Image (tube, rainbow, N blue to C red; front, side):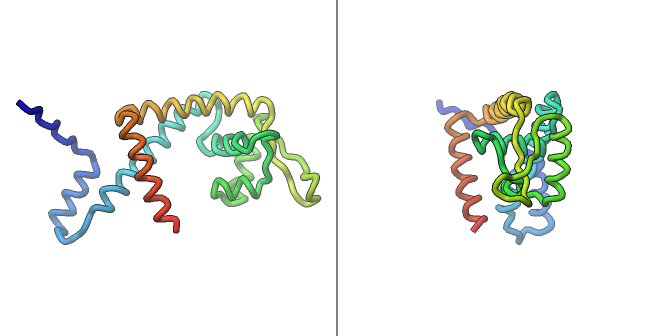
Length: 170
């Protein structure tokens, strides 16, 4: 006796696809099926990350600034322009984040010794401690979400998404 496959559970995107199939059966909704789920997943995980980072007193956007400085390696310093480019933010948007993080004592801005007109942004000891704790909490939340797939399928999904991302960024 063979095991019957478990019926596929429907999600909100399935309902949208079914609606389109009724009113526009000529549409190829394959892209909608993929990107609808990617958008919903990004929003859901973004909300979960906001909750994870809240006890640290930071938002996702502020986490991104601190994490970018941390990934830069010692001395954990970048220019505001480098941060803006990495995070795809306007300089105005970056300034607001930097102001808040500096007031919280998590980073400091100082003159760039190589460019009299420039600034450097550096993690403080408190910023380094906080980002090291927050990144562990964020990665744990991602791991909890991926547990639904298991390691092999999660790796397969990562490969497929990488391939699609590279194809769309050309």
